[in-house]
Length: 104
Image (cartoon, rainbow, N blue to C red; front, side, top):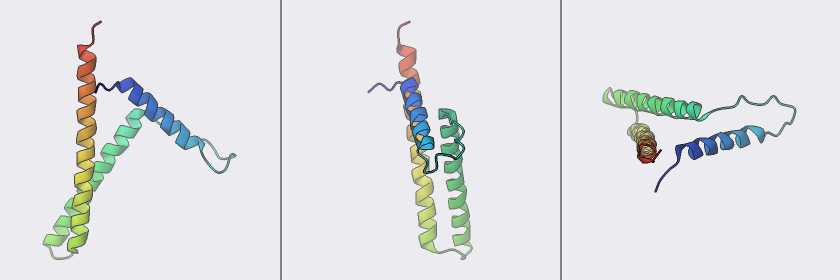
């Protein structure tokens, strides 16, 4: 399945615009427009933060200060975030390779 990254970027921008314009108060100031780059940056920062939280929870468990359930939850959240980032990266690389194979 070929993925067109330009279509994906346009879809994310359109979704961001729809989400920011659906406020309850029409007099509120409009939110600044976000871009695909901002979205990717935010996801990357969230995944790094989840990893740090998991590391802190694991260190607390080793020291005997944390509940095992909290550690497992933090590690699971970090694992899911990492799997999501890897999947998106793989899709972007596949789309880039598809673009490279296109005839000029």
